[in-house]
Structures are given as C-alpha cells and as structure tokens.
Image 1 (cartoon, rainbow, N blue to C red):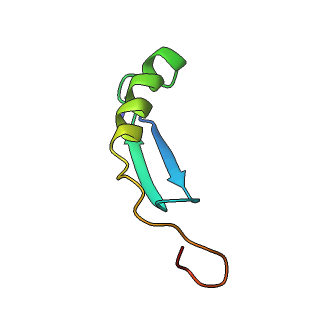
Image 2 (image 1 turned 120 degrees about the vertical axis):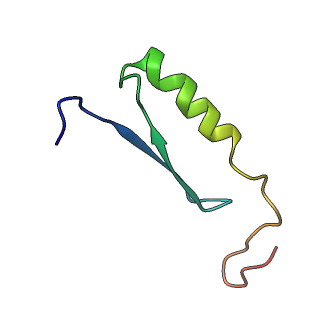
Length: 59
C-alpha cells in the first residue's frame, strides 16, 4: 500500500432502482469533504421506471 491512504463510500439503493455506486473520496472522510461527493453520486441515480409489486414484479 502507498503512503497516501485512500477512501471510498458505497451507496446502495435497494428499494426502487437497485443501483450500487462506489464513490471515491480523494479529499477525505469528514462530512464537509464527503457530502459534495455523495450528493453528486445521488444525482446520478437514474429515475425510477415503473414499480414492483410483491409477488408479481410488476406494478
């Protein structure tokens, strides 16, 4: 491992789009460094298309 530590955050949205994202945190893990990266990642989640009903998979 190098001399500079690295950090990533994982974002998993299970209920609607079932998206998973790995967010690089090159500026650090404190809230003021983390929040802008997380917001950018959340804005990249595709819009929900259709719904899912239990048992049928179709809304």
